[in-house]
Length: 143
Image (tube, rainbow, N blue to C red):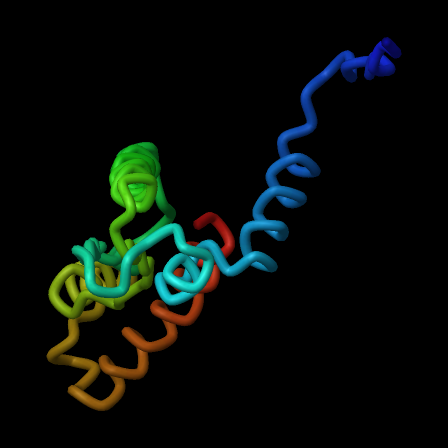
């Protein structure tokens, strides 16, 4: 009987390389697509389906620990239902959340001694879209 060769563990954990490798493998295997789970016999097409509607982060600034905690719980729930054989879908997204974003942009304008009324509708909407472009890119990178 031959012994399996022992693999030495790295002195420090490198989450980026580990998570990237695993995520790429999950993607290549199609594990994030409910139809793939059916094809692989891991879910029943006639069985129950489960989908979580993830409220997207508002484009009001940087993500924080509360966003991470919520996403972790939602991800855990999706994985749980997937392991139970459900066709499970977790589809994250983003939104520029009109009222919340408007409030933040108005606050920024106020710091500059301006108001949305002084700017006018068209210019104010441009300001909101500029804000959205900056912070959506930031949130997408964080997420």
